[in-house]
Amino acid sequence: MFKTILVCLGSRDRAAALLDVALPLAERHDAHLVGLHVVPSFSNYAGGMTPAEVPVEFFEENRRLMQAEAEAIERMFAERTRASAIRSEWRREEATSPNQHRVFNRHAMCADLVIAGQARDAEWGGGTILVDLVMGSGRPVLLVPYAGRFDRIGDRVMLTWNATREAARAAFDALPILKDASHVRVLAIDPSEDRSHTGLAPADDLAVTLARHGVKAEAATSFSDTISIADDILSRLADDGSDLLVMGCFGHSRVREMLFGGVTRHVLRHMTVPVLMSH
Image 1 (cartoon, rainbow, N blue to C red):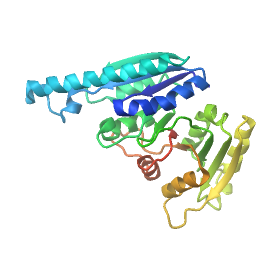
Image 2: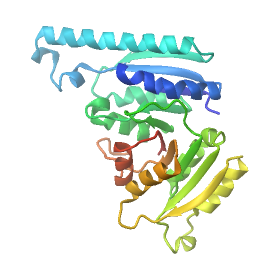
Image 3: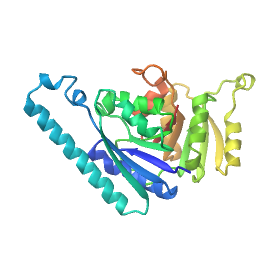
Image 4: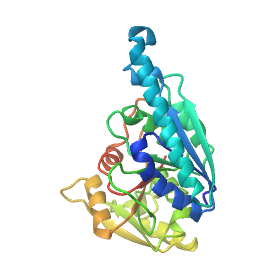
């Protein structure tokens, strides 16, 4: 069970959609829900300039707008949690340096599950803060698309499997959700013909293991042929009517300015359903 869920509420226009996901999950798992809003540092919203390099009016106006945004998000969180029976907690923190990823990671490391929004343009520091959250916190992160509302997730789940450490971590991090699902498909894309001789676990083995946990899982195989693996995943999600994708996150965790691996990056840019990722 997820007993502590952290929801990162970065902007007022996406807060409601993120709470639509977080509140039912918290209720289902009888979890303590923590709402977090991090006010950006001055250098982030001033394009890297220092306070001495901008007019006082600019500094004060942007400061006022950010405080108003934070207060509006806090009110929404309070109203939505008050209407439910869950235990909740509000945290608001101001980033004092461009290294905002440290703030998010510090809170995320003590949560069973982190919920955050899909990165858009300048949000999340152009995506680098989100990268650090997924790859640096050591916790599963549930990313919610910026388009659409998702009142319930985890009924029909697709779990991508390529027999890697990251994929295994994601599969078992997702167990609290998988146990409640009516259908879980373990999808192996373009499996190597000689995989049985390399010591890597096939999708069938994972499906059997998940079944011992009470998960209604089945193994499936797909061959991407002329399209990319990422596009094949997105296509299969639509064909199967899946409402959640579970996948491992690939990249180089020791390099802060890294990019996600190609498949991961493409899926997160074009995601149509929430994605639970682990690294």
